[in-house]
Image (cartoon, rainbow, N blue to C red; front, side, top):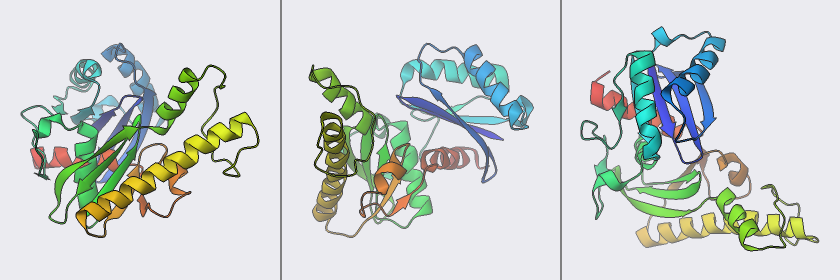
Length: 258
């Protein structure tokens, strides 16, 4: 089986693929100080609960946007699974995707590369991929299936946290969809501003990308908050929660011919 690891700024997701089938996935909070031994203790226990063992794993791929974590994740793969991981961004890893940018492809986040690869595999381009993570990213795949840039905005939770930190009299609140746009108290007013403001950001940026490129483009949403936001706007055509992991699998297959 292939162990695919998507290490983001907030969470790291571990998934096992047997061919095209995902046999299990598990999520842990990102902690750059977490050692390979700590990862193994946690992951092997969860694999056991799913009826899987370390011997089932014979390959690994890592897509990480947290360089401090990459060392420990590589050591996890080597020490506990006897697998030399393919790491996105390293010279040995090639991406099955055309790149039309003014900068080296190595500057693009591993998650954004995986999303673009998976999106043009699962949906007909041109496409806009919106990933709701610590940052919300918009990535554009043109009609030829080439990655041609995108937009990076603060994530929804990050926006709310910044509001709480900068305004002394505002309380900490949960991200929720308010019943009305106009809040009749402080907390619903904050929730409305963050939630509906964010929906407006999504709709506005998607509209501007489509206008700038002059073509109809389907919008694919992924990331933890994708279903939450997608229910409030018609601009999102598909919600694909496993898009990044599927992209990691495709990149590994491209590099290994497996």
